[in-house]
Image 1 (cartoon, rainbow, N blue to C red):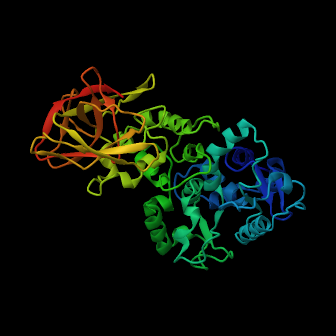
Image 2: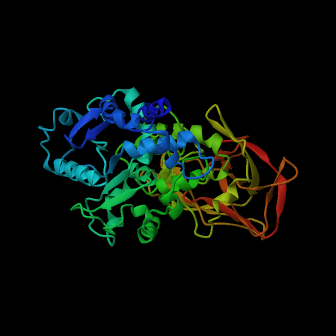
Image 3: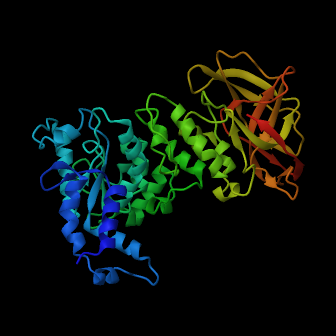
Length: 475
């Protein structure tokens, strides 16, 4: 007699944890979940209490967790991670016609090889973003549901098959453009089991290993090439911690559509928001609107370059968090930020309210103009004259639009990652420690500070501890 709890968890797993469409490898057609449910229900009903007991591996292991593991072992599917062919890929419409109209040789070859490798892993089903999502005219609700769930789909897959079309061996695989695409970031981090294949569908490394995430040499190469710690590649957990570090990983990658730079990070940063295209860098701003108040890590403000058109305190994309914007001398551990700065900063009427430790630059001037990396902008070196002898800042330039002639007469630094003191109204710059800052400007007619853009994250170091009253700034 079937165990009702097993059947319920199986149905929940189909509904919430795996893709709604899959390629049935036996007939190379895309099928919907009812077909999958009907196929596997006899095996699910055959699960016994003895099976549950045999799959309980430690005392007090939750029964529902054991059953879910049994279900995942029955419903095995593989996912494909790849770069799209220039000539196009097999579509959902072609696959639902029985696969007889797959007219693109390269995509047909790729799909066939993927399904063959999936079958070698004992999978009856496969999922590819090319033909299991309706891209002819996807309804908004399908995108809303699919994008936040893709991380879960990759996490619950039996294996993720990665096809590197430009590589053939471990020596050259990090040069593959797969590593430059934004969506492949979560496709690297989410799966428990990953296998890399080269252009001719031979394994990139270690033919005998069924999981490249268990290979220390390949893990070390991945970490070096991506900047992601080995432990995160091996077992990544989404959450609100280390947001800036994760954005730095993403800053190495690009997307075809501007909005994907934000939507590809939804699950990685544990954010739920509406998916909408045609809004440009507004998508990244919306992502950060949700994440910033919840992160409680002040280094989310440690970015450089051009500001977004909506918020002057945020960049338009993850590229603003690139490692190139940090001086090599400034590299504190990410734990450094958890008990520092203003953990109650909040966005009010499109402005950020934050408490900073302000240091005025009384005699600072600017150097000559020079072109900036982005067209339409120029940079002027900041010459911080008049600083106390025990205080120093790094070499930075102020970035301005070519259409802006305004130059502030007053400058100040707002130290963000100050230490806490017993007085909530005061912050501490610690002796010998490098802190990061925001640069502000004003002229004689202004009563408030304006944030200035810089070509690097501004840092300040003092040879003596400085304890001073905090100021509430609206940016």
